[in-house]
Image (tube, rainbow, N blue to C red; front, side, top):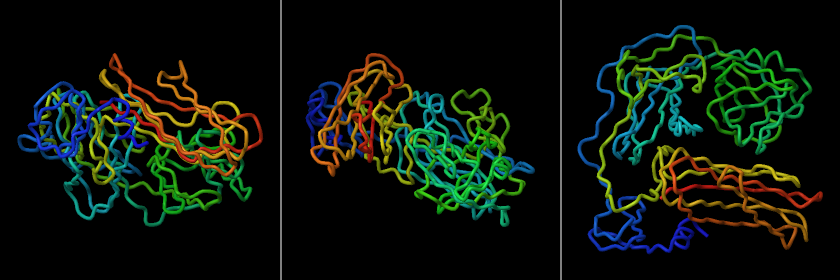
Length: 451
């Protein structure tokens, strides 16, 4: 069952195709207008179209002063937006760049809760000054906080390198790697756990501990920048990385570690530009990670173009088309998490996947999940359970494959009326019946959608 079918079945809505505006609608009717799926919250003839009004404008309207930061490997600068005003559009962003520097641009939502990090740009500047990047306009509601940051470095033409072979593993939960292994867990994407002994039985602990912020780790086509000083965790080394993405590689791979020289990097700054402005804050740090940034009053070289929007009061926004370019998903009312290839699940419940939203207003919420699994056993069961109250109570599914080669696909969705404001969660655990057979979750998606 698709999400759309689940919505229709779950709330008894009436779909009105070919919407043109001005018709009479009953409470619960749904229409698609200007790329948005909306539901009438009362009997109404109000036009459901959401339209931009007034002229778009950039929030920063002054001139930055170039400032050289000496002897660094990496700087991070950006802006935090506390969207306390009426609903409006985010149309584009712009970055103040210096020719030859490499810029990775990130959108970070739920910044005051559990940050959700998404890379929305990655390029080497071919000229200096402001560059503008268009995105499909994204509607942002009130009471939303998000950051847009740039992580900046300058490529070293001759880095000091060492190479080693490790077995690259992507388990669901973070766990100490075995000898010769690098663990990059689905639930710990910002860290590599690297065993001190490589796959060729060599002790690489001294080399790994000599790495520092801004150094680069490469495997295949994937490249990570080190964000914190490596930590000695016993038999393995913990390294925080960016971006928070896994390599497509799996199994024994050649990893290249690049120790880069310090350079002088230039940033733009206007001191105290946002002084007294509680809705916009500056972000900056050198040779350290995003999580250690303390917001300040300064303007840096990240800016966004916004535009006011006319939003009908008799209609609730349910979803957008999801057609934004560059992978951008700005603060939204649809939240999801997905995992894949969770292999050889045991006979006691273990976490599979969890999604957590930022604080949302009270109202109708749709929870949903879909999954595919295999279990090479006859007459034996697999168990899955989910909770929407942080594990206080669980709802359990039990299924029994009819054949050892079956691959089973399932979808489940349900609406709930949430009475109070707050963050929401949906988490899933799974186990198999006692025995030696292998139970694999091939993929599992969970989502929460605010109506």
